[in-house]
Length: 263
Ligand code: MLT
Image (cartoon, rainbow, N blue to C red; front, side, top):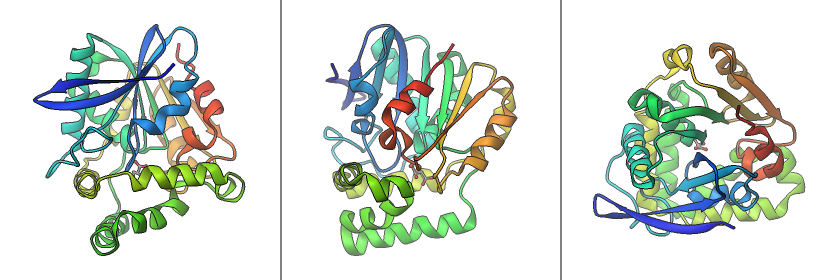
């Protein structure tokens, strides 16, 4: 059973979703979602695992709608503070897309807290010049036309062609989740995305067990990026999920959870 709880961090109430008992695994959600994006994994948590999914700052029902300027390091510090609040010394850390960028920041900040890493539909590189232009255009869309227009813009990129063609319920759920995001949270997250550093040189230093997961139809962080990331980490495993795009955990949830097989 998935339970919603909250803790107070620096006077802010932070919601997190929790399911299962056992080895802790922290799920860091993509942009512009909340911990709810992990419900398919939480609702069928495998035996022996305790899944913990926090709302990243600004996102989710308890957030108060964003913070003025954030970095991936701010998010990583929040994760450490949450681990302290949970009395979890070490955990498997699984980040999807923006969650993966935060996992890299956490690796630089507190590698001793990471038991193993799962890097899903993410990449170590910062934005390309073209990617930066796209972010600024998204902010323009948000300011002129609101969050629904952001959903219109993002949906075709976030979801794989199979999902767009065959899974109308997933498309509707993803749209509804984007529309729940507070505009200020989107603005703050875009600043964090724009300012994130290059994590490529960290890959060779990742000595803990690592799993790379990617949807075969992911066009934002495509399989070629995942293969390169996998090749740069000694001893990492790679799973390519067929019939899934960038939001692979929502598009093929059971296959995604099966891929979280950490030694
Ligand atoms: C995400 O899913 O978190 C975003 O697509 C990240 C990105 O745009 O780089």
